Image 1: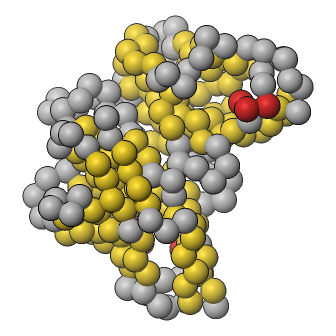
Image 2: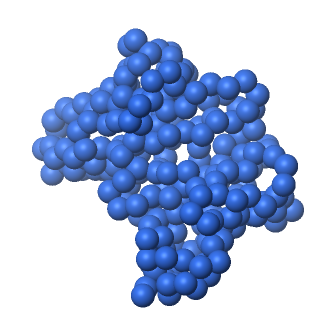
Length: 115
Length: 116
């Protein structure tokens, strides 16, 4: 079984400032890693994913994340946020080679971008 | 294709009533998933289908919950004798099947259920 911990439930940040959202996971097997964003009253949209290869992954809207196997982390960063980045962000994992590719999500981090 | 579609978007029901939600996946996506998201939490896996076969069910899916995907296209999730604890956002997602690699799941906008 896997678990995902998002260490910050809420992150306030000023517009054009950098932001980092922390994600740690626990699993007895190798996993794929994902970050999703959820805008108010919307479904989830994939920001980026790590399947294999380079540990630095670039996604949409200027986001990037770095996979650190030894620390079992997959932190999300953006160098300069916009008001439109106000949303909830979810880190998720799925087991490598598992049938079904079901996702296990963290509790989410709410980002509030202030002008 | 307009993506994953869920209907209704919002549902208010009285405790004890039955409710049914519908999900239309992206066409040609073999896999369809249901998740439940309560306020302030991340989504939790409920069940998934590959074509018409329901291949896995979470322990969260009590016997009051039933999901179907009769023709391998749209799916329905029914909750019988609703309880206040069933109030949540119910999310549907779909993905294609690809050998040997994980593929992105595309989510619908969800059905928000409020049990009063």
